[in-house]
Image (cartoon, rainbow, N blue to C red; front, side, top):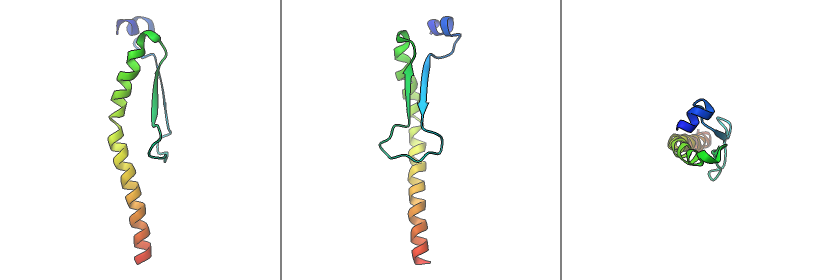
Length: 80
């Protein structure tokens, strides 16, 4: 952590790439990647990725709710 404070002024030497917010993607798609820009901090990418992975549960719940809404809307249109 002292290396990050000293050489990066406290900013994490990471690159995070993610699909755009609200994008509809296949279930097997990656939502984000985390890369370290400094080999001395390679461990940091795994730590941050583990933290970001915790957002997966609400995203999965929203995805299921969206699919169910579509199914129910179709059924409602068919049955009146």
